[in-house]
Image 1: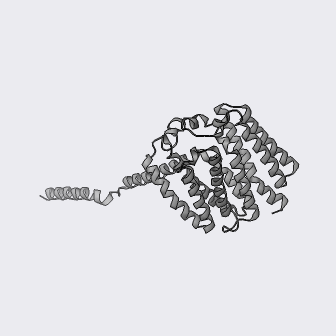
Image 2: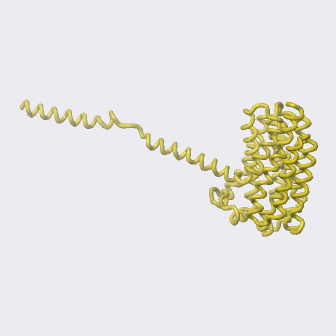
Length: 325
């Protein structure tokens, strides 16, 4: 009888331990929480990469040259300001590129399939919503620095609307060049304000540098059109390569050479630096004249942006070696 009771007691004890084990040693559902967190992080990176793809092709043509410009024209005295300058430029570039790429997504279907719309990373309706959400975002970021930075942001948003929604991108080449020049001037004004000691004002050197830069863009921005001639012809744009197929390429080398000589004199470059700058302009312009295939035009346009970045850096030369700042 004792054995039976002992056996029953042991069995009952084992059953109780067996029943308690799951509740006593069970773990919280960490795998599910980790999965949710991982999905959240993946979504963030997905959207950040989508934003990068909108601006990818303009990093070399806008973000880098204008960063050079603002750093030199301000001039920047605290390297901690550089991320602020670059983010301001990139955010406004994103605003422009989303607007621009929603205008003619069918063109990108053929030529630029890695962009967010042709690659189906988001729909056209979603891109249009993003386009108009970016406008107040640009304004809010700008006013955090100064009302003058906000004015630059408003100007840039207006010129974006004029260029894209109001059709200046497909207007006469002179109108297109002028709007492009105004847009780059707005980029440069905002970026230079953020880079300088005082975000409320530009000094005389900064103002002159912006005026010179606007002139460069107004007279040489057609350099980007040679590589896109076939696509522009399909959608009816009136670019210089289309309207002036014979002399169009000379409209790049002549102003590049003239600007190089004029800027060398104005910013008081030494003889060696001036010679290198002028020779670079002649070499890049000469490539446009001699090498006329689409791949060659793409490479030449990269080199044009090297020359442009050098031109944008010249106010920095003046600050350092002429004024001694």
